[in-house]
Image (cartoon, rainbow, N blue to C red; front, side):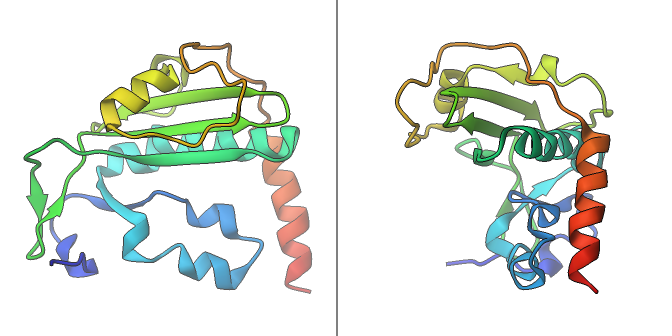
Length: 176
């Protein structure tokens, strides 16, 4: 069985897109290092990875600061016969999805973004129902009871600048 290696990405035009972003583990240098496992990577166009997908990741962090505990599900959508990169034939997803669940409020948001360059901006065009993700990704998820998988609710308020200030305060204190 082939295993992805960093060399598979060299010259491919794709970033090693973290599924669980390294920045989410900044509170622990040891855990952050673990996020760089190739098992946590998928080929992602730089114009998505460093743009709208990054914006979604930043927004999720702001939601976590505001709401507390969140459950995050994330993954790629890979077709039956995908394009591949590298000597190990790493499958290139056609899209990526993320589901954010607030178990205390029994609320959830879901997003799907195609594998294309998308500038940072409004997340609403990429918002879908959880059922849409489940169908597209061919998955089942252990969702908390009470979550409406058919809804596309209003986006939660988010303060990315507030998250950045809190991150700087808390992570900066770890290095002292």
